[in-house]
Image (cartoon, rainbow, N blue to C red; front, side, top):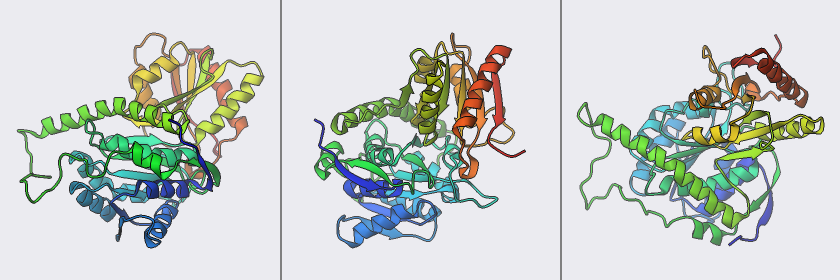
Length: 395
């Protein structure tokens, strides 16, 4: 059943807050940080106005926000919070606690550059470097996706086969502060889509003795970590199922990958987040010139959908990975390295060319993307299979 959309004009931050209001979580520990602040500000308005019955907990730092989230989630509460940049970095210690305790906390990330120097604009390094924290990790391109992924994140993380925390990123100011049309769902649709609150198996309960976060040494530590890996493997299938179910009620097609003119493409851009929209626009410009090029948007970063990406890119000559992040001293960009691992020695895999761009909110112009396309074609002609370079900066 597709529910009739309620059209609203909202920024990405406001879309996240509105979706969180409709979910009506039990606990929201909050600490403000640009460009995420509007999310928790708007949600605090909903608390003040009596539109949710959430326990809103102002804390003194992002480390405390995630610590309070862990404590609340361990009791069976449905928990939501949000952060950005240095805030996510400060949470880092507790990210591992949340996933190790198998707590399905939902975290919205307003992707922003990390200091130094200080910069408050878009970059995805803050979220990408959490790749080993055992969090399901998604990216959104628009305010619409920010709204939709907020809702889906709860169902993915709380699935009994998963029980892992979920984060999703939207780029600072580019999405967080841009006013867009957002097709929202009625409250009834959200209630029917999500499972009842507190439908969580392992919780702190005074009537039943359980151990949380105890000391585990050589005898069982690896077994517990392996369970997390198995949960992440199941999260791949659950995410696909949840996105398909959400597509049925919203009328918007959601998949872990989004293909654009890839069927007959010889070359492709690989993107995630807001860059995907610009890449599709450049594909249109190049197609108008007769070029066989397409684009692939990665919506789910963890678990990394390597086999799906291989099927989408198999037979292509070469791809340009547009990474809004830098991995200093690495042979490839963050996403490029994952792609290289996933495609290694597979028949028909394209050559991979990483392009570090857009750091600190800088915009990569269409003309520059066309130059990247020409460069990748030349790399293919020259027989180069793996390159990494910076683009869109002053030397």
